[in-house]
Amino acid sequence: MSRRRDTGEADGTGLAGRFILWALRQRLFAGCSCDPLLGRGFYAAFGLSVVEAGLATFEDFFAALSRNITGDLGFHCPCRSDASADEKLILGFIAACQHGHELCERRIAVRLVGPDRAGLLVTRGRAFARALTRGDLHLPPPGGTITGGRAARYRSVPHQTDAGVTLH
Image 1 (tube, rainbow, N blue to C red):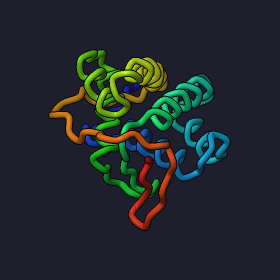
Image 2: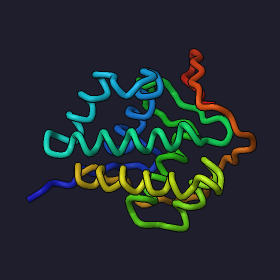
Image 3: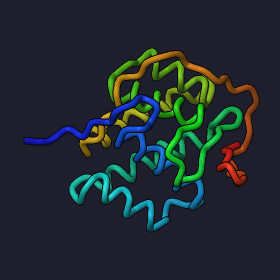
Image 4: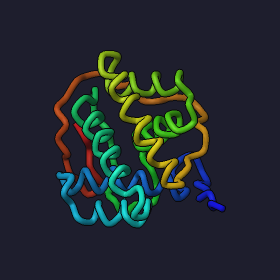
């Protein structure tokens, strides 16, 4: 019998949310997918049976997000336990993908990458959400309102500050 790993709060304080936040932050700070710490983290979270699928779908999702964002996204450094508003929006998107909330998926994707690239982000987000489910990492269903619009289009370049990193 499989034990479901509960996630706790929807803002990322549970296991699945903390893992997703750490993975996004670590990938952004490392600057490349070859970071050994990222690989070890996925191995610890997913186990041997699904680690490659988990990491591959995460990379696809990260690429779709980072190459197509509209505006700036604020990320905290990997060691922070709280989530920024943008990180909460991404967690809500992954939760919507994991729970099959298509309208919520689409709305958040449009906020993050615009209407032209939203379909790609949804496809990649769903694949990552399925990998999380196979790895027994479950986010709670999405709730609340969608906040934080994105106005301008920028290249995806991490900008490091003392508080964290901004993807723009």
